[in-house]
Image 1 (tube, protein in one colour):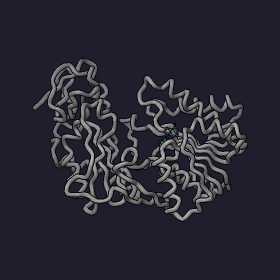
Image 2 (tube, protein in one colour):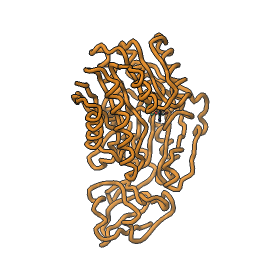
Image 3 (cartoon, rainbow, N blue to C red):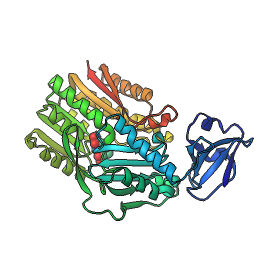
Image 4 (spheres, helix red, strand yellow):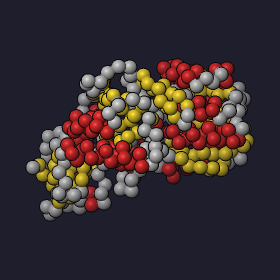
Length: 394
Ligand code: SAH
Protein backbone atom coordinates (compact mmCIF):
# COMPACT_ATOMS: atom_id res chain seq x y z
CA UNK A 1 0.00 0.00 0.00
CA UNK A 2 1.26 3.47 -0.91
CA UNK A 3 1.23 5.99 1.91
CA UNK A 4 1.49 9.75 1.57
CA UNK A 5 2.24 11.77 4.68
CA UNK A 6 1.32 15.46 4.88
CA UNK A 7 3.17 18.33 6.54
CA UNK A 8 1.90 19.37 9.99
CA UNK A 9 -1.29 21.42 9.73
CA UNK A 10 -1.89 20.42 6.12
CA UNK A 11 -4.56 17.90 7.11
CA UNK A 12 -7.10 20.66 7.69
CA UNK A 13 -8.73 20.77 4.27
CA UNK A 14 -9.18 16.99 4.14
CA UNK A 15 -10.71 17.09 7.64
CA UNK A 16 -13.25 19.55 6.20
CA UNK A 17 -13.86 16.96 3.45
CA UNK A 18 -12.41 19.16 0.75
CA UNK A 19 -11.06 16.68 -1.82
CA UNK A 20 -7.81 18.40 -2.89
CA UNK A 21 -4.28 18.33 -1.48
CA UNK A 22 -1.70 20.57 -3.17
CA UNK A 23 1.85 19.47 -3.90
CA UNK A 24 3.31 21.75 -1.24
CA UNK A 25 1.35 19.98 1.51
CA UNK A 26 2.94 16.60 0.86
CA UNK A 27 5.86 15.75 3.17
CA UNK A 28 6.73 12.33 1.81
CA UNK A 29 5.50 9.32 -0.06
CA UNK A 30 4.18 8.88 -3.57
CA UNK A 31 2.89 6.44 -6.12
CA UNK A 32 2.46 5.89 -9.84
CA UNK A 33 0.12 8.14 -11.76
CA UNK A 34 -3.50 7.51 -10.76
CA UNK A 35 -2.74 4.95 -8.10
CA UNK A 36 -4.65 5.00 -4.85
CA UNK A 37 -2.73 6.14 -1.78
CA UNK A 38 -3.53 6.22 1.90
CA UNK A 39 -3.20 9.85 3.02
CA UNK A 40 -1.98 10.39 6.56
CA UNK A 41 -1.56 13.42 8.77
CA UNK A 42 1.87 14.26 10.18
CA UNK A 43 1.06 12.12 13.24
CA UNK A 44 0.09 9.08 11.13
CA UNK A 45 -3.66 9.52 11.49
CA UNK A 46 -5.72 8.27 8.51
CA UNK A 47 -7.22 11.13 6.51
CA UNK A 48 -8.40 9.78 3.17
CA UNK A 49 -7.94 7.43 0.26
CA UNK A 50 -6.87 9.48 -2.71
CA UNK A 51 -5.69 9.28 -6.32
CA UNK A 52 -2.07 10.34 -6.81
CA UNK A 53 -1.18 12.79 -9.59
CA UNK A 54 2.63 12.97 -9.74
CA UNK A 55 2.79 15.90 -12.20
CA UNK A 56 -0.13 17.99 -10.99
CA UNK A 57 -0.19 20.87 -8.54
CA UNK A 58 -3.27 19.15 -7.17
CA UNK A 59 -1.20 16.17 -6.05
CA UNK A 60 -4.00 14.23 -4.36
CA UNK A 61 -7.72 13.98 -5.04
CA UNK A 62 -9.67 12.23 -2.34
CA UNK A 63 -11.91 9.30 -3.20
CA UNK A 64 -13.14 8.60 0.32
CA UNK A 65 -12.72 9.71 3.93
CA UNK A 66 -13.70 6.29 5.28
CA UNK A 67 -10.71 4.20 6.39
CA UNK A 68 -12.61 0.97 5.67
CA UNK A 69 -13.51 1.90 2.09
CA UNK A 70 -11.86 -0.14 -0.64
CA UNK A 71 -11.20 1.86 -3.80
CA UNK A 72 -12.02 -0.73 -6.44
CA UNK A 73 -14.22 -1.28 -9.50
CA UNK A 74 -17.31 -1.68 -7.31
CA UNK A 75 -16.60 1.62 -5.56
CA UNK A 76 -16.20 3.46 -8.87
CA UNK A 77 -19.37 1.89 -10.28
CA UNK A 78 -21.30 2.88 -7.15
CA UNK A 79 -20.17 6.50 -7.56
CA UNK A 80 -21.30 6.55 -11.20
CA UNK A 81 -24.65 4.99 -10.26
CA UNK A 82 -25.13 7.48 -7.41
CA UNK A 83 -24.49 10.38 -9.76
CA UNK A 84 -27.10 9.16 -12.24
CA UNK A 85 -29.58 8.36 -9.44
CA UNK A 86 -29.12 11.88 -8.04
CA UNK A 87 -30.32 13.34 -11.34
CA UNK A 88 -33.18 10.86 -11.64
CA UNK A 89 -34.28 11.77 -8.10
CA UNK A 90 -34.43 15.43 -9.17
CA UNK A 91 -36.56 14.50 -12.14
CA UNK A 92 -34.03 15.83 -14.67
CA UNK A 93 -34.34 14.93 -18.33
CA UNK A 94 -31.44 12.54 -18.86
CA UNK A 95 -31.54 13.02 -22.64
CA UNK A 96 -29.48 16.24 -22.45
CA UNK A 97 -27.83 16.28 -19.09
CA UNK A 98 -24.54 16.35 -17.24
CA UNK A 99 -24.43 12.92 -15.59
CA UNK A 100 -21.20 13.30 -13.64
CA UNK A 101 -19.86 16.65 -12.41
CA UNK A 102 -16.43 15.81 -11.06
CA UNK A 103 -15.70 16.54 -7.43
CA UNK A 104 -19.35 17.35 -6.69
CA UNK A 105 -20.27 13.78 -7.61
CA UNK A 106 -17.34 12.20 -5.78
CA UNK A 107 -15.39 11.53 -8.98
CA UNK A 108 -12.69 14.25 -9.02
CA UNK A 109 -11.72 15.21 -12.55
CA UNK A 110 -14.52 13.28 -14.24
CA UNK A 111 -17.10 14.93 -16.48
CA UNK A 112 -19.80 12.91 -18.20
CA UNK A 113 -22.35 14.66 -20.42
CA UNK A 114 -25.18 12.93 -22.20
CA UNK A 115 -26.50 14.09 -25.56
CA UNK A 116 -29.31 11.87 -26.84
CA UNK A 117 -27.83 8.38 -27.27
CA UNK A 118 -24.22 9.54 -26.85
CA UNK A 119 -22.45 9.84 -23.54
CA UNK A 120 -19.28 11.93 -23.57
CA UNK A 121 -16.57 11.22 -21.03
CA UNK A 122 -13.96 13.84 -20.22
CA UNK A 123 -11.15 12.84 -17.90
CA UNK A 124 -9.10 15.60 -16.32
CA UNK A 125 -7.12 13.70 -13.70
CA UNK A 126 -4.76 10.77 -13.36
CA UNK A 127 -7.19 8.98 -11.06
CA UNK A 128 -9.98 9.11 -13.63
CA UNK A 129 -7.60 7.96 -16.39
CA UNK A 130 -6.66 5.02 -14.18
CA UNK A 131 -10.29 3.96 -13.60
CA UNK A 132 -11.61 4.91 -17.04
CA UNK A 133 -12.53 1.37 -18.21
CA UNK A 134 -14.55 0.88 -15.02
CA UNK A 135 -16.32 4.22 -15.41
CA UNK A 136 -17.23 3.30 -18.98
CA UNK A 137 -18.46 -0.13 -17.86
CA UNK A 138 -20.59 1.45 -15.14
CA UNK A 139 -22.08 3.93 -17.64
CA UNK A 140 -22.91 1.11 -20.05
CA UNK A 141 -24.49 -0.94 -17.27
CA UNK A 142 -26.62 1.98 -16.06
CA UNK A 143 -27.57 3.19 -19.56
CA UNK A 144 -27.41 0.19 -21.92
CA UNK A 145 -28.71 2.19 -24.89
CA UNK A 146 -25.86 4.72 -25.09
CA UNK A 147 -22.69 5.00 -27.17
CA UNK A 148 -19.62 6.31 -25.33
CA UNK A 149 -17.31 8.96 -26.80
CA UNK A 150 -14.20 10.29 -25.11
CA UNK A 151 -13.27 14.00 -25.18
CA UNK A 152 -10.28 14.06 -22.86
CA UNK A 153 -8.71 16.96 -24.71
CA UNK A 154 -9.15 19.88 -22.32
CA UNK A 155 -6.08 22.12 -21.99
CA UNK A 156 -5.89 21.41 -18.27
CA UNK A 157 -4.74 17.85 -18.98
CA UNK A 158 -1.39 19.26 -19.99
CA UNK A 159 -0.94 20.71 -16.51
CA UNK A 160 -1.75 17.27 -15.14
CA UNK A 161 0.94 15.71 -17.32
CA UNK A 162 -1.70 13.71 -19.23
CA UNK A 163 -1.86 13.27 -22.99
CA UNK A 164 -5.09 13.95 -24.86
CA UNK A 165 -7.42 11.06 -25.70
CA UNK A 166 -10.42 11.38 -28.01
CA UNK A 167 -12.72 9.12 -29.99
CA UNK A 168 -15.32 6.42 -29.66
CA UNK A 169 -14.73 3.87 -26.94
CA UNK A 170 -14.82 0.49 -28.73
CA UNK A 171 -17.02 -1.12 -29.86
CA UNK A 172 -19.02 2.09 -30.31
CA UNK A 173 -18.91 4.24 -33.43
CA UNK A 174 -21.10 6.06 -35.90
CA UNK A 175 -22.18 9.64 -36.38
CA UNK A 176 -20.82 12.10 -33.83
CA UNK A 177 -23.57 14.60 -34.69
CA UNK A 178 -26.73 14.12 -32.64
CA UNK A 179 -29.85 16.09 -31.85
CA UNK A 180 -30.92 16.98 -28.34
CA UNK A 181 -34.08 18.60 -27.05
CA UNK A 182 -33.68 21.35 -24.48
CA UNK A 183 -36.61 23.30 -23.05
CA UNK A 184 -38.64 21.93 -25.95
CA UNK A 185 -36.14 23.21 -28.55
CA UNK A 186 -34.11 21.02 -30.90
CA UNK A 187 -30.36 21.55 -31.03
CA UNK A 188 -27.63 19.84 -33.03
CA UNK A 189 -24.58 18.80 -31.05
CA UNK A 190 -21.38 17.35 -32.50
CA UNK A 191 -19.54 15.58 -29.73
CA UNK A 192 -16.31 15.34 -31.75
CA UNK A 193 -15.97 18.97 -32.77
CA UNK A 194 -18.14 20.96 -30.35
CA UNK A 195 -16.74 23.04 -27.51
CA UNK A 196 -16.03 21.22 -24.24
CA UNK A 197 -17.97 17.97 -24.63
CA UNK A 198 -20.08 19.45 -27.41
CA UNK A 199 -22.48 21.91 -25.83
CA UNK A 200 -22.98 24.24 -22.85
CA UNK A 201 -25.50 22.25 -20.84
CA UNK A 202 -24.87 24.46 -17.80
CA UNK A 203 -26.94 27.31 -19.27
CA UNK A 204 -30.14 25.28 -19.76
CA UNK A 205 -32.06 26.94 -16.91
CA UNK A 206 -30.83 30.41 -17.87
CA UNK A 207 -31.98 29.85 -21.45
CA UNK A 208 -35.42 28.78 -20.21
CA UNK A 209 -35.55 31.85 -18.01
CA UNK A 210 -34.59 34.06 -20.91
CA UNK A 211 -37.38 32.66 -23.09
CA UNK A 212 -39.84 33.40 -20.26
CA UNK A 213 -38.67 37.01 -19.90
CA UNK A 214 -38.79 37.65 -23.64
CA UNK A 215 -42.32 36.24 -23.74
CA UNK A 216 -43.71 37.85 -20.61
CA UNK A 217 -42.16 41.26 -21.33
CA UNK A 218 -42.96 41.16 -25.01
CA UNK A 219 -39.32 41.83 -25.95
CA UNK A 220 -38.81 42.11 -29.68
CA UNK A 221 -35.25 43.14 -30.57
CA UNK A 222 -32.62 40.83 -29.02
CA UNK A 223 -28.82 40.81 -29.22
CA UNK A 224 -27.16 37.50 -28.29
CA UNK A 225 -23.41 37.92 -27.80
CA UNK A 226 -21.11 34.88 -27.78
CA UNK A 227 -24.01 32.88 -29.18
CA UNK A 228 -22.11 29.63 -29.97
CA UNK A 229 -24.74 27.34 -31.57
CA UNK A 230 -27.55 29.75 -30.77
CA UNK A 231 -29.01 28.43 -27.53
CA UNK A 232 -30.13 31.84 -26.28
CA UNK A 233 -31.14 32.89 -29.81
CA UNK A 234 -33.58 29.96 -30.01
CA UNK A 235 -34.87 30.83 -26.55
CA UNK A 236 -35.53 34.40 -27.75
CA UNK A 237 -37.30 33.17 -30.89
CA UNK A 238 -39.38 30.75 -28.82
CA UNK A 239 -40.27 33.69 -26.58
CA UNK A 240 -41.55 35.63 -29.57
CA UNK A 241 -38.67 37.96 -30.40
CA UNK A 242 -39.05 39.40 -33.88
CA UNK A 243 -35.41 40.26 -34.54
CA UNK A 244 -32.50 38.32 -33.05
CA UNK A 245 -28.93 39.35 -33.79
CA UNK A 246 -26.41 36.63 -32.83
CA UNK A 247 -22.69 37.32 -32.60
CA UNK A 248 -19.79 34.88 -32.40
CA UNK A 249 -16.25 34.75 -33.75
CA UNK A 250 -16.60 31.10 -34.75
CA UNK A 251 -18.03 30.62 -38.23
CA UNK A 252 -18.63 26.94 -37.54
CA UNK A 253 -20.68 27.75 -34.45
CA UNK A 254 -22.73 30.30 -36.43
CA UNK A 255 -23.44 27.76 -39.18
CA UNK A 256 -24.76 25.38 -36.53
CA UNK A 257 -26.79 28.19 -34.98
CA UNK A 258 -28.44 28.93 -38.33
CA UNK A 259 -29.15 25.21 -38.76
CA UNK A 260 -30.70 25.13 -35.30
CA UNK A 261 -33.02 27.97 -36.25
CA UNK A 262 -34.15 25.96 -39.28
CA UNK A 263 -34.42 22.76 -37.23
CA UNK A 264 -37.08 24.41 -35.10
CA UNK A 265 -38.97 25.88 -38.02
CA UNK A 266 -38.37 29.52 -37.07
CA UNK A 267 -38.43 32.04 -39.88
CA UNK A 268 -34.79 32.83 -40.75
CA UNK A 269 -35.89 36.39 -41.57
CA UNK A 270 -36.18 36.96 -37.82
CA UNK A 271 -32.46 36.26 -37.36
CA UNK A 272 -29.14 37.82 -38.28
CA UNK A 273 -25.77 36.18 -37.65
CA UNK A 274 -22.63 38.22 -37.25
CA UNK A 275 -19.26 36.49 -37.56
CA UNK A 276 -17.11 38.96 -35.62
CA UNK A 277 -15.50 39.93 -32.37
CA UNK A 278 -18.14 40.86 -29.79
CA UNK A 279 -16.31 43.88 -28.44
CA UNK A 280 -15.86 45.38 -31.90
CA UNK A 281 -19.47 44.57 -32.80
CA UNK A 282 -20.82 46.26 -29.68
CA UNK A 283 -18.83 49.40 -30.48
CA UNK A 284 -20.01 49.30 -34.06
CA UNK A 285 -23.68 48.91 -33.06
CA UNK A 286 -23.31 51.78 -30.64
CA UNK A 287 -21.74 54.00 -33.29
CA UNK A 288 -24.74 53.27 -35.51
CA UNK A 289 -27.10 54.23 -32.69
CA UNK A 290 -28.78 50.83 -32.47
CA UNK A 291 -31.02 49.93 -29.53
CA UNK A 292 -32.09 46.55 -28.16
CA UNK A 293 -34.84 45.33 -25.85
CA UNK A 294 -32.65 42.55 -24.48
CA UNK A 295 -28.97 41.62 -24.59
CA UNK A 296 -27.26 38.37 -23.60
CA UNK A 297 -23.56 38.40 -22.71
CA UNK A 298 -22.27 34.86 -22.23
CA UNK A 299 -18.53 35.12 -22.87
CA UNK A 300 -15.95 32.34 -22.60
CA UNK A 301 -13.89 32.08 -19.44
CA UNK A 302 -11.97 35.39 -19.35
CA UNK A 303 -9.91 34.36 -16.30
CA UNK A 304 -8.41 30.88 -16.50
CA UNK A 305 -6.43 31.44 -13.30
CA UNK A 306 -6.28 33.76 -10.30
CA UNK A 307 -3.48 35.77 -11.99
CA UNK A 308 -5.79 36.74 -14.84
CA UNK A 309 -8.62 38.10 -12.70
CA UNK A 310 -7.68 41.75 -13.08
CA UNK A 311 -7.47 41.62 -16.85
CA UNK A 312 -10.68 39.60 -16.94
CA UNK A 313 -12.44 42.18 -14.79
CA UNK A 314 -11.58 44.89 -17.32
CA UNK A 315 -12.86 42.74 -20.18
CA UNK A 316 -16.14 41.99 -18.38
CA UNK A 317 -16.59 45.64 -17.52
CA UNK A 318 -16.01 46.72 -21.09
CA UNK A 319 -18.62 44.50 -22.71
CA UNK A 320 -21.17 45.17 -19.96
CA UNK A 321 -20.70 48.93 -20.26
CA UNK A 322 -21.27 48.75 -24.02
CA UNK A 323 -24.32 46.55 -23.51
CA UNK A 324 -25.85 49.07 -21.08
CA UNK A 325 -25.41 51.76 -23.72
CA UNK A 326 -27.17 49.63 -26.32
CA UNK A 327 -30.15 48.81 -24.12
CA UNK A 328 -33.22 50.98 -24.26
CA UNK A 329 -34.49 52.15 -20.85
CA UNK A 330 -36.46 49.25 -19.36
CA UNK A 331 -34.40 46.82 -21.45
CA UNK A 332 -33.07 43.54 -20.11
CA UNK A 333 -29.46 42.41 -19.75
CA UNK A 334 -28.65 38.79 -19.04
CA UNK A 335 -24.95 38.81 -18.21
CA UNK A 336 -22.71 35.91 -17.22
CA UNK A 337 -19.27 34.94 -16.03
CA UNK A 338 -18.02 31.36 -16.06
CA UNK A 339 -14.62 32.27 -14.60
CA UNK A 340 -14.19 30.39 -11.34
CA UNK A 341 -11.67 33.03 -10.23
CA UNK A 342 -14.29 35.79 -10.48
CA UNK A 343 -16.72 35.23 -7.61
CA UNK A 344 -20.35 36.31 -7.60
CA UNK A 345 -19.69 39.34 -5.45
CA UNK A 346 -16.82 40.55 -7.62
CA UNK A 347 -18.83 39.95 -10.78
CA UNK A 348 -21.66 42.10 -9.45
CA UNK A 349 -19.17 44.85 -8.58
CA UNK A 350 -17.73 44.73 -12.10
CA UNK A 351 -21.19 44.98 -13.65
CA UNK A 352 -22.08 47.82 -11.25
CA UNK A 353 -18.94 49.66 -12.39
CA UNK A 354 -19.98 49.14 -15.99
CA UNK A 355 -23.43 50.65 -15.30
CA UNK A 356 -21.81 53.58 -13.54
CA UNK A 357 -19.66 54.28 -16.58
CA UNK A 358 -22.72 54.00 -18.82
CA UNK A 359 -24.49 56.41 -16.45
CA UNK A 360 -27.41 54.12 -15.71
CA UNK A 361 -28.72 51.90 -12.93
CA UNK A 362 -30.37 48.51 -13.14
CA UNK A 363 -32.42 46.24 -10.97
CA UNK A 364 -31.21 42.70 -10.23
CA UNK A 365 -34.31 40.71 -11.07
CA UNK A 366 -32.64 37.32 -10.57
CA UNK A 367 -29.31 35.61 -10.13
CA UNK A 368 -28.73 32.38 -11.99
CA UNK A 369 -26.22 29.57 -11.96
CA UNK A 370 -25.70 26.21 -13.53
CA UNK A 371 -28.61 23.79 -13.40
CA UNK A 372 -29.12 20.97 -10.93
CA UNK A 373 -27.23 18.53 -13.14
CA UNK A 374 -24.11 20.56 -12.21
CA UNK A 375 -24.46 20.01 -8.47
CA UNK A 376 -22.79 22.25 -5.98
CA UNK A 377 -21.78 20.67 -2.68
CA UNK A 378 -21.11 22.32 0.65
CA UNK A 379 -17.62 20.87 0.89
CA UNK A 380 -16.48 21.88 -2.59
CA UNK A 381 -17.34 25.56 -3.14
CA UNK A 382 -14.99 25.66 -6.16
CA UNK A 383 -17.79 23.85 -7.98
CA UNK A 384 -19.57 27.20 -8.34
CA UNK A 385 -18.13 28.77 -11.48
CA UNK A 386 -21.09 30.06 -13.46
CA UNK A 387 -22.90 33.17 -12.31
CA UNK A 388 -25.57 35.13 -14.09
CA UNK A 389 -27.31 38.42 -13.37
CA UNK A 390 -30.68 39.08 -14.91
CA UNK A 391 -30.94 42.86 -14.94
CA UNK A 392 -33.57 45.37 -15.96
CA UNK A 393 -32.16 48.75 -16.90
CA UNK A 394 -33.87 51.68 -15.19
N1 SAH B 1 -24.08 31.25 -25.01
C1 SAH B 1 -23.61 30.01 -25.58
C2 SAH B 1 -22.26 29.60 -25.04
C3 SAH B 1 -21.17 30.61 -25.24
S1 SAH B 1 -19.57 29.94 -25.22
C4 SAH B 1 -24.65 28.92 -25.38
O1 SAH B 1 -25.69 29.19 -24.76
O2 SAH B 1 -24.44 27.81 -25.85
C5 SAH B 1 -18.59 31.27 -25.72
C6 SAH B 1 -18.61 31.57 -27.21
O3 SAH B 1 -17.88 32.77 -27.39
C7 SAH B 1 -17.95 30.56 -28.12
O4 SAH B 1 -18.87 30.13 -29.08
C8 SAH B 1 -16.78 31.31 -28.79
O5 SAH B 1 -16.63 30.98 -30.16
C9 SAH B 1 -17.20 32.74 -28.63
N2 SAH B 1 -16.16 33.74 -28.55
C10 SAH B 1 -15.03 33.73 -27.82
N3 SAH B 1 -14.39 34.91 -27.90
C11 SAH B 1 -15.13 35.70 -28.71
C12 SAH B 1 -15.01 37.05 -29.17
N4 SAH B 1 -14.00 37.81 -28.80
N5 SAH B 1 -15.97 37.54 -29.97
C13 SAH B 1 -17.02 36.77 -30.35
N6 SAH B 1 -17.18 35.50 -29.93
C14 SAH B 1 -16.25 34.97 -29.12
